[in-house]
Length: 315
Picture 1 (cartoon, rainbow, N blue to C red):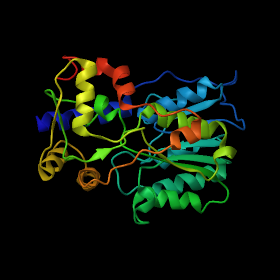
Picture 2 (picture 1 turned 90 degrees about the vertical axis):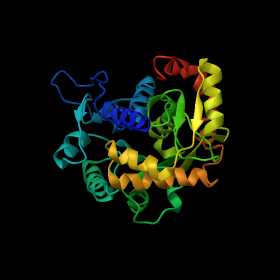
Picture 3 (picture 1 turned 180 degrees about the vertical axis):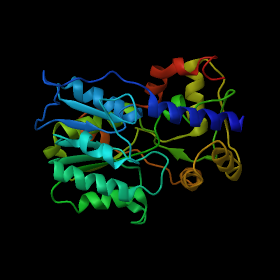
Picture 4 (picture 1 turned 30 degrees about the horizontal axis):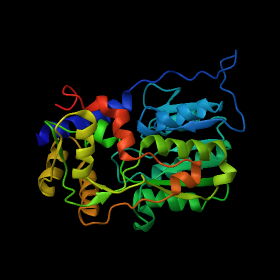
């Protein structure tokens, strides 16, 4: 069952990078993308947060250029600096998401930000992670935060979300064989709905001046243990979903054997140890502070997502 879980996590990760979204065509008759004060580049636009951020900006009537390795307005690959300039042409605002499952990307992001400033970008909303402000400066995400803080030519907003609720329906917390398998002990986490992350991100990108310099720790309204989350899922789906607290070494080893980079296994260990030790994220009002709307509860998310845990899906 562990290997099945790892396989599904890897498949979800791969699908996330290639899942197609509709092209967002803002080209004029001569085929040139428009340049305006609000043209926003959304990186990771086929992933969990990026796709939702792009859609929310479009719903506000704002022009968007989506970027991803495949299936977006423009191809973008962190490993290919040649893709940076075309993505940045005419861009004023950026939704920044670093490379996935990497721990050594700060230099690449710095090169990208250099080009963004040179191209005329004025604001960056950066998706970091909860608690990264307390991490050592050499930690990649913290390094990117500090880089942004030191760029007077760019305003910025930093988003530090807790664990995603959608991990229970799309990736590594999805029930397999009727069980959620993760070494989190009895620790609790204030899981946040990705829709709320997207709502905050799109709000900051729609009105950068109002959120310049802001740092939001994004959480849900309550902290739940994995066992409590499993019970909510069971109640709304009608399926018997249990929580299995597995040995951490075994879990990390299975993840690495299933294709997760070994260096990222260290991150997985730290993330689960943080929750298991009782130091998970705590509920706060930052989502409401940024958007004016209260964050979704886990029960709200589960009811909306119940179809993901049908017998066929939660196998």
